Length: 598
Image (tube, rainbow, N blue to C red; front, side, top):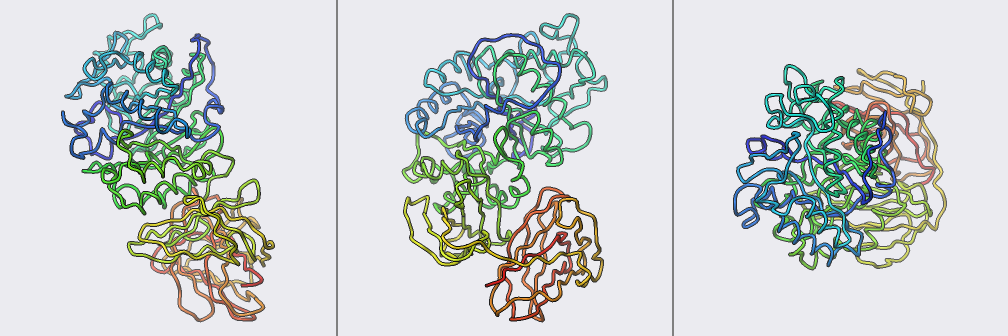
């Protein structure tokens, strides 16, 4: 969230995050000529903490008794600070993040200082923002704050407001003459960085929050993304300016960007920040904090395309993790565990929006499970789907020690069994399985593990291979032995094996792999290498059998190849495997790898 017109905005348009972590230390004014990579030491691992926005935005009885977003007060922030220090700090939670509204009164009227910078509302924060940061630091925690992109309209002051430490510069000198608007809510005037005064304004904002002692800034409404596109809403220059301004304060800073950012500009987000929201708000803006269908379940579709961009220095931010308050969360126990599982394996920052003073025992167990936290905070890479994005799916990541982190999800509305076949991980034979949520060694399983899961349920395992590497036969999509029909055609693909792929699989386009040979009949998990800038479905069939429709997760763009494994029945000897777009649009296909044994 973050906009001067928040009160009239659609509820879910109210959230986005830039996280500016300003570590304690002396403040200097060392100019930096060019923006560079954001300080990676601040995001060596995903950050952990608490954010005020989920409770601010909820209509749960009693949370906002004095009107919309009224939860945000100094007293409430300090109450959550005390609770975090007592309950969560020892598990790695450290950021206390104050979200939108700290400079606005109960009617959402903003306050600014003499230089057009946001100024704390004296009713919400009577002690001032520096005092609150000091109180947070006194508990051994870090303080976070929030700002929207651009120059807020109310700060313009007819263009007469001076810019601090910039002789002769006023607000008229930092925006476009036509006062075009920007950010996700058009609440600010777009900054014109071709004008020398403009960087000075961002410098002054960064210096102010550095002087207050904040360790985290959420920059909200950043585009491309945040529901907007086009030059007017391109805030890459703003983000670069914040990178420069933070460096100029002399303080290390974690910069987090929000919301629902355009993956097409991910190189910029990675260059200038330490994290980026990949999706819209997780809050449902209803009578709970979240809801499964309205705000949580879409992350399983939206996260995979971003997975390869996460790593030390910058992480994919799935938004707040609200699993600790039971009824107020608005989720079943199974949904709360699945929510926490995805956030952990995706290496998302783990910051909760729950009321930390009212954590129930189950919620506390989810937020403080050291084995699950270790998946998120340790050297394990982010997981991605190894099976299609169907109602039952498996996500996995190979760890540096040769083990695998494996999550099973049943996203269906009814109970179902989910199987993790070891061939989807690249090996066969036996493997030892440890249940991370229950801290239990489950023993040795041969070739696979199958679990009965409740609706929206999950399991999270560490799998230690004891068998042998899987051997496969590769079949390239561009092979002249294959049959293309309908619109299907060859295309260049620098990331694909052989440098080619088969695309234009739409409205009846088909690709048939011919003469795929196996030694005996059985069900084989064939690995499909494909390219798809969005999640797309395809009908897969073998020989003369019926087709099964699978949704393949996004690979992030139309030039990157990823893989998932799909089960197909094969007969001994020669087989055909067909990918049919049906009446829709299917992914481009790079190749298939067929195991030599089922």
